[in-house]
Image (cartoon, rainbow, N blue to C red; front, side, top):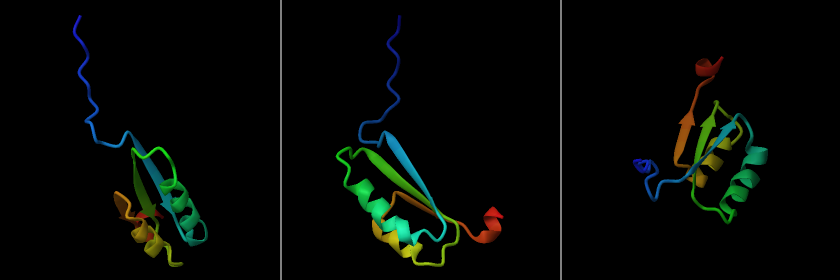
Length: 77
């Protein structure tokens, strides 16, 4: 019997955390700080913003997510 090949590449985060935001500045700062404070560090942050106008995008940029997807209202309505 063959040993299964290992698909995980060492160094890749085993967990992707996906956060969706639309005018959520009131909660984003605490949420993103809470993620950074976790003892478990093998994760990546992916944030999808749906056209926020309340400063959310600036908070997201400061958090330096692995991926930051910005949608316009026309893309999700």
